[in-house]
Length: 219
Image (cartoon, rainbow, N blue to C red):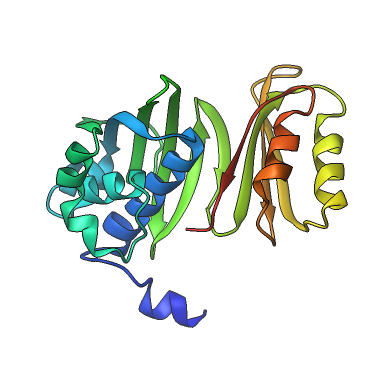
């Protein structure tokens, strides 16, 4: 156990799970979209659904979509700020089977029309797990610099991406590949010890078979 486990994250309250964790889920979802969001349908399950107004989980998710961090005082005003920036948000309750009680599904549309659905859970102490992207199961926590690479499940794609990272001396902390089926849609999750610069990310996005590469900063 470390000091973070005892005292929790630096944050705007009232709850590390319902507020700080929710901000982190929203921020990761916004970075995965890769552009300014204009519409967000935010669906809450379990404890989130029962208490999201009282604990400010709605404000927290929206604050994350606006790019705020858990200790940003603007979280309390995020719903108003979202309207001012042209982000239209709706909130709904859902009932999911076998889901963590602090689960949210964020259905996003960007200014270009790009669509993204992200499912995440706030698992305690401000920690999160991103569990699905566009219905494809994944698993990462946003603690590292993270590359989220959508690609076809074909030979050579993973090796080509790893070679690019090695050539730029970016150390891989962990790598996981999730796929819908053999030869189908896949997502590569690569956590790195260093930030990946935009030029390297552009090169990754041009690897044959890669559909999109998003860079997620630690949150």
